[in-house]
Image (cartoon, rainbow, N blue to C red; front, side):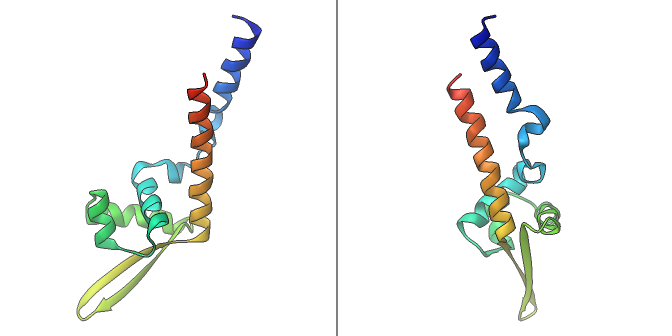
Length: 115
């Protein structure tokens, strides 16, 4: 292997060392979908997110709670008549985490395309 090829292989492999520098909380498919949807439209109703992402109530509740525990989203629960309405909003910390994730993925994709 030439020195140039060795350099390229090492540079490419370095992008994936230690989990590729990707936030595992954001990297999970459902949570990435929640953050991406909220980045486009926040706040969003629980039912709208659930339906848009094709999730069950329980699945969205669990992933939403994980994101809330990390400070990436907040949930507001209100009552409209006798019905409870839950809305999710992305926080500045959540926007920053998503932006960082997307920047890192962009670097990985750029490297792969230029290989």
